[in-house]
Amino acid sequence: MNAQYANVIGNQYAVPNWLPQQAPAQPPPTPQETQAADARAAERQNASQRARTLLLCLLDDRQQNEFERDRAFTIRAESGQRYRLRWGHTANIEVLHRNRVTRRLCAHPHNVHELPIEDTLAAQLLHLRHNEQEFLRGANVHP
Image 1 (cartoon, helix red, strand yellow):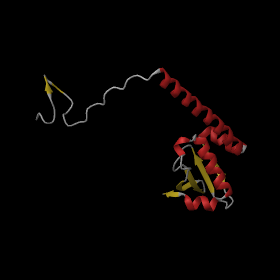
Image 2: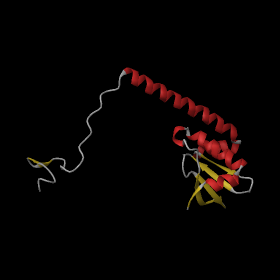
Image 3: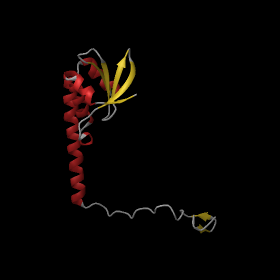
Image 4: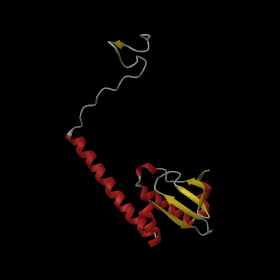
């Protein structure tokens, strides 16, 4: 094998020269960094629990059971259109016709990745319930 592509060591080949080398190891976190990371993780967990409580308050019993079972729930908007909101931040809204998905919608808050998924679902639910046409105007459509 050409030396420009790999270094030969005995009968074994080393990592090819042209591949990026592994990044140098990072020093272990300081106790303060570990404590701060633990505090952020606890706050995210607390926020997720609060968001879940809020979302479940917005759902009826059937929707709550559906959410617990499938991590998704179905709603009927004022227009009569049915939507299934699935666990996730993006492209998680299915437009239903006779229980079949006709397309997916993507519409979420700008800071979506800073929020618990349950908060995103609650925002999508409320927007579809109370201003479906505005929601649809702003949503991206996925076939």
